[in-house]
Image (cartoon, rainbow, N blue to C red; front, side, top):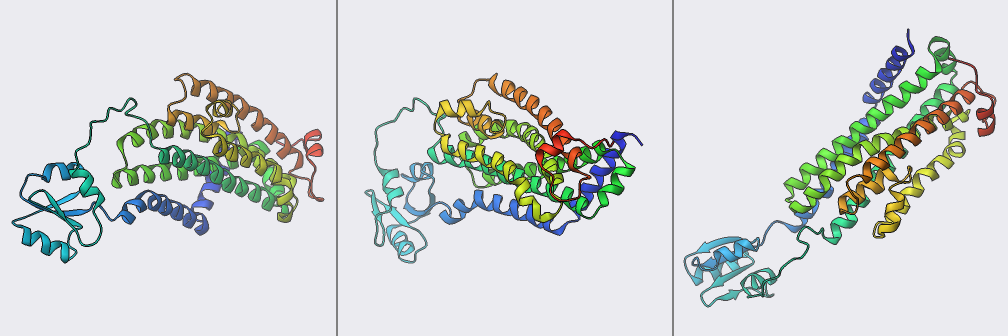
Length: 355
């Protein structure tokens, strides 16, 4: 059996085990549910457009352009009855006059008012809510997906080491194949989960009738976020396996994974803290550990030139190659050391000559 065939065998087993894991399936469904809910909830809370009764057809067009649901009625008595019965928020009758119960209906009054024309110098500008929510969503997705799947990689490695199953595995297949299979399987699962979340989010935005400019801006950002995510996850995946191998028991994982968790958390908070600072975001978009979030955010806000994501992706690819080599060395140097927790220096200096 070649190393490639062995890696495929390991990856297939890891994926099958995860897809049968009720906890993994439940967490995926829960993530998709909250994604859809987060997009559609504002529309549900809003309850749809306000209903307004109108006598005649004079003001129908202007009210509909304002996003109001118009119900035409034959006379003022019918309009007044609908307001009293709470079938509509307000009524527009001849004059024009607006009938309401207790409070002036702001949207109706605004639609009927004459305002000077406004010329937008930047009509495609994104509103402030979108400028905050989209970077927050991208950073949160990368952070939690990387942490959750990374910890699962470390736990799987430690469990195999603690139960001595790894000794049987490395006697049958090269250690390179074991590591490659685990990393490939978790990367595929993480990417699949993220792709599902992206699809559900975009469909939810369509259903919720989110503004066109926001969707037009987020599509290319998501398109770039996916390859950045894959490379960013790969950059850390072998390191997760390495720190998992440093632990001899599950109880040791907190100590061995702490530096890597800090490495993931720091860029997350930096991007959120400096998302409104163009200079800082430019720097962060070229730092490999923050680029998977910072560069897509800059593309979303229109602050990145066309060539920038390619350069950032190239730097990320180079760093990923280096971290894969480093993670593999730590993994190989500590996998068969079962007498207590292995130090990073020991694992790095003395890689076990297997596979």
